Length: 118
Image (cartoon, rainbow, N blue to C red; front, side, top):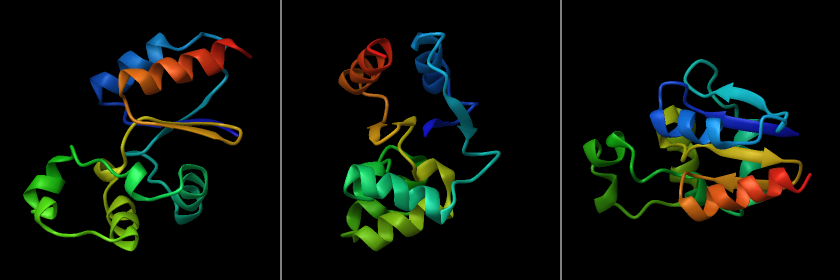
């Protein structure tokens, strides 16, 4: 599997996609138009080791719902990610059995390196 989960309306996601090698050969999955399935999330969880790693604490709903004041469990993170697409830290890129989560510069540099080494 070679897939990128992103939000088409997100400037940061678009900028990251433009920075990737043109021959990356990724399947694009807009999470707003096509919400992630339980199976997809479970595969991401298997690669990342936790739902919390996939969860965006920058989402506006995180603040609006007051979630920062609550101790969330792994099941809570899973439920919220499936409930609303903004809770998935993005982009998420899966290259076979390797996962890259979020838009931090070190993560994007690792992704670019992995793609250029192919």
